[in-house]
Image (tube, rainbow, N blue to C red; front, side, top):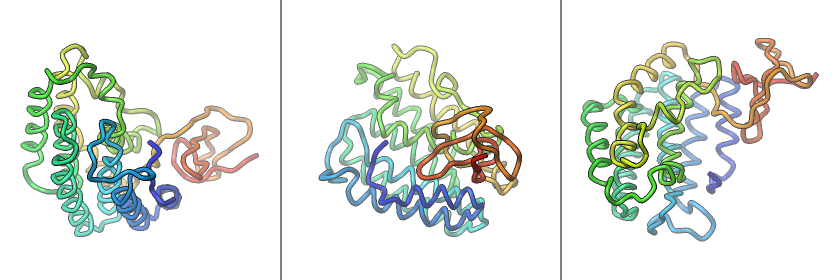
Length: 255
């Protein structure tokens, strides 16, 4: 996504690999504040942006809340969720495209789920209706869905889901979106509809297992150059400054 995270995402991923989830939450929070100050060099967070880079700030707050939940720091997760919801509401005044405002509704619903608030179902339904209403204004739903704002709304649930799937891709593009991109409203409304059905349960499972995987970066299977000392896997995940085991997200070592 290439936003100004101040190097804190690399710190967060290193903390995830060490199972230090509160520290990971702190690093994700710092990354969020950094992005919200200046998403990219010279870019104001209050300027209209058809790519929506500033949405990464909400993504990092959301991931921070998830880390705090896994760490058992529920009050901190609630505070971070509240912060993210407030930012999302404010950004709806500057990211003025109806489809972007709908995506912010989706992110706000995610933050309600991560912060363990009430009315999560209603929040996802609001986002789905906003997508349907915005459908006629979208010329290419597939192009919109690959912008940084929409990637910010897709990444956290994918990270949570891969934590329960041996590090594999557990939520595919066609699962998160509708079958017909020409019907833009319904195509995009599938995102909050799917999350309404799955996200809270997935979150509860990672909390119960006390394990959140690192995000998936560049991967290589069955290598002859790395082996995980924790689980023995030779599958590698290169992400930020870390070389991790694809399976357990622990640091892997060259052989």
